[in-house]
Image (cartoon, rainbow, N blue to C red; front, side):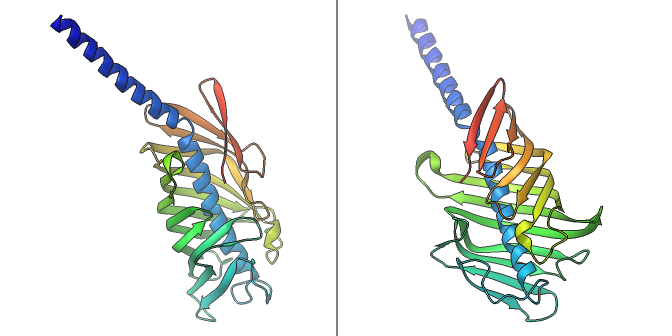
Length: 276
């Protein structure tokens, strides 16, 4: 009887562990894919904000304008007024305000610019001061390095280092993503009209790595270039392979939309996710 009791207890313990593993796998069916896509979109969003601000600024390299770049921007300051290196600070309301694209932004984006943005070897180093995009806080560093032209199109290297994307929310809505990436980015459409950034398109190839909210490490490879347009809130096209330890590869497809909806395929199934 004693042996039988021990056997039953052992079986129950195995079942409990199996259930926990199953629950964790279910939690992580699309978590890494979702958090990669949201991180990629969030940092591209920051670059697009800095990109358009620089191109519209009189001194930094664009056409003269007396209007702020967006209704949600409190102010923009450049130090010094002329010459390089220069620091550009984009101030949003500390409490957050709704921008023309519908996102709420708060805090400050700080961009240190080594030389004119369009010059070869120009380096823009971007950091954050209590910066939020909607409910997502961004920290870390992003560097935009101008590598010059290829086939008459500007090419940049985008490097994200030791970034955290944190959303404080109860239950499974909380997000805490650690993220690094290195990508080659071509400024495609719109490069011939540098004073009109609204028609610009950026095209990215490269790699990323990180850890998702559930502590699962992942690596991401862009297999079909991710494209993002300045006049679209979301990245438009692209395919990405997500690798995770002890889990099947996930295949992320942006599906040519501008709505934040993506498909994630693994095994013989496809699930759909939507980023805010």
